[in-house]
Image (cartoon, rainbow, N blue to C red):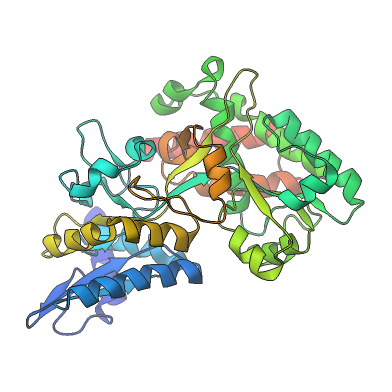
Length: 422
């Protein structure tokens, strides 16, 4: 069966990617006469991010006329495409590891630790992009610092301080409900996408289960012995929010494309994550200002943390025939002026420390510059495949088909099942 499965994946790879390659090129890069072609796959999705990436590619090609970079930006299809290409051992010359540099793509990437820019790598990314041996798995185009995004204009109007604890967060939501008089949603979810609830559980799992010394379950999560009753607090709180009317009434049908308009109309107080939302809201309504804060603590005495690490990266395929050309592109974009251009163009902190980049949230990142960045919970502590059941359990909880304890029980069952498949 395994042989048949591999053959099917190889056939799929030929079918999926063969039509995009000319006779002189391969999906892993190639040359046409004296001109070298590199393939580059990235997860950048919004138009401004894509424009930023294409601009730096164009600048590189102008300075290196013998190298042509063919970018592929397949959005939601990215992960499926890369899985097929991994099975076929036919990876792009340059590709985005989107949070899985070590755990998923590690065996396919070239070690970049000998490159000139490594001395400028933000230390916050070390645990995400490096292993114990010192191997460096990818170049960070930018980095994620996820927490809670909030309507700063609204909070100032209502006299609410950005919360530092979960209890303060709940109080802030209840104050927004009271003062908003039904016109403002305290905490908004695009719940038609189960990923919205996955984000809630994933980001709050870190202060619940990792960062507090007295409630640290890293060892148990990594060795498979974790008692999932310790997770029940999160679905309990989510259900409490719904019962108190702190979530949008259409929480299970709301869609992502609604969020910018609603935030620009002062109809949302908080969202989980959403760090890139600010510039889009500003374009619609410059009077509405957004802010970001690290994750509120759950246990007394703990310290707030950002959730994140790598956002967009570029790794070099270790079997690429164009490794030197691929590394040349990475070296090119590691120049301070281009590091700045990419960070500001994507409204995210830079991955290198060799420049000062200004973006929509710069003041907030500076204010909380000493706050530790913790990696995304699922990328470190959960087996691959847990994101879907984690998000789906939120939908089932709020639709009334699961209780908080059943959510934890289901998570435990999926956790065990997926661990056994590894």
